[in-house]
Amino acid sequence: MDFRDTPEDAGFRKTVQAFLAADYKPGEGGEARSAYQAGADGGPEAMDRYQKWMKKLATKGWIAPAWPIEYGGAGMSIMQQFVFNEELAKARAPRPGGIGIAMAGPTIIVYGTDEQKKQHLSGMLSGEDIWCQGFSEPGSGSDLASLQTTAVRDGDDYVVNGQKIWTSGAQFAERMILLARTDPQAPKHKGISYFLLDMKSPGVTVRPLINMANSPGFNEVFFDNVRIPAKDLLGEENRGWYIGTTTLDFERSSIGTSVAQTNAVDDLLLFIRERGGEVHPTMKLELAERSIEAETARLLSYRVITLQNRGQVPNHEASAIKLYAGELGQRIAASSIKLAGLYGVLDSKSKLGPDHAANRYAPRKGKFVRGYLNAVAGTIAGGTSEVQRGIIAGRGLGLPRG
Ligand SMILES: Cc1cc2nc3c(=O)[nH]c(=O)nc-3n(C[C@H](O)[C@H](O)[C@H](O)COP(=O)(O)OP(=O)(O)OC[C@H]3O[C@@H](n4cnc5c(N)ncnc54)[C@H](O)[C@@H]3O)c2cc1C
Image (cartoon, rainbow, N blue to C red; front, side, top):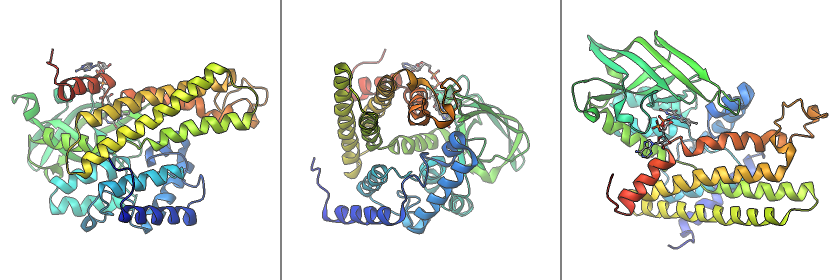
C-alpha cells in the first residue's frame, strides 16, 4: 500500500489540522468518545463538555463523517474518515460517534422509510438524541440469534416482553435499536424483527450495572408489555437479523483508530520523563514492545481501510484488528500500572494516600487504574476475542469448523 496521502486527502488533512489548531483547546471535549461514556465516567459536567465540542464539530458539518450529504452527513470518503479520526486522535480531541451516529443512523439510512429518516436523523445530528443498542440478552451474546425477547403484533402496535443486558448508555438514551423475536416458530435467524423503541414508553425499566471500574456504563433493560407502534418497525417483519448484521458491520468498521493506542504509549513515555528517575531495564524492553505493537495495530488498521477504500468489505481482516487492538489495550494498561508502581493502583478518590486531596498519590489522577479496569471489556464488547479468532481461522485461514 502507498502510505502517502493523495493531494486531495493531504488538503483535507490540512483543513482538519487548521480547524483543530484554531478551535480546539486541549481537554475542552473531555476524554470520552461518546455522550453516554462522558455521562457514565464524568457525570453531567463531562457530558455537557462533550456535547459542546460536538456542537462545534456540527458547525463544520463533521458530526456524521460517514453519512451521505443529503442526510446531513459530511459524505467523507473512507480515507477522509480515517484522516479525520487520525487528526482528532492526534490532537486528543473526542471523535463524534456513539450508537446513534455510528450505528443506528447509518442503518436507518439504508432500511428506513422517508418518515423514519425524517423523524430520527436530525436529533442524532444535533446531538440531542442519544441512542442505545438493545441486542444482547442474559442468554444471548455471541450467539445473538438465540435471543428470547418477544414482540407480538396487536392491532397497530407490537407488545414487547423480555430483557436486554449490557446496554451501554440506556440510562441516558431517548431511543433504542431493539431486536425482538416476532416469529418463535421460524428458524432462529428468520423470526427476529428490528424496532426503533422510544425509551420513555410505559413498561421500560432501566437498571444500571456498575462495572469494576466503578462506572455505571451499562444497564439491564426490562420490557413489561411495552407497546411499540408498528410504524417504528425498521424494514420488514422477521428480517431483523439481516438488518442487525448491517448495524454490526457499521459497529465493527467504526471501532477506534490505532492512533489512540500510540497516544497511550506516548503518555507513558511522558509520564516517565515528568516523574524522572531510573527505569528498570525490563520495563524499558516492555515499553519498546508496546511501541512496536501500537505500530503493528496501525498497519492492521491501514489494511482494513485500504480494502474499504477499494470498495471491498473487510471480514477476517476486521476481526484481526479488533482482536489485536483489544488485547493490546490490555497489555498497554498492564504496562501503565507496572510503571506507575505501587501507587498506580490508587484512583483519584482513594483515601489511602496521605495527600489524596491533592492527588499526589494517584498518578495521573487514577487514569492508569481506570484504564486497566476498563480495558478488560475490550476483548468482550463488540464480539469476544474467541469469536474473532474463530472468524480468522475459518474465513481467513480456511480451516474446517468443529
Ligand atoms: C463494555 C461492554 C459494553 C457492551 N455494550 C453493549 C450494548 O450497548 N448493547 C448490546 O447489545 N450489547 C453490549 N455488550 C454485550 C456484548 O456484545 C457481549 O458481551 C458479547 O457479544 C459477548 O456475549 P456474552 O457476554 O453473552 O458472552 P458469551 O457469548 O456467553 O461468551 C462467553 C464465553 O464463551 C466464549 N464463546 C462464545 N461463543 C464462542 C464460539 N463460537 N467460539 C469460541 N468461544 C466462544 C466467549 O468468547 C466468552 O469467552 C457490551 C459488552 C461490554 C463488555
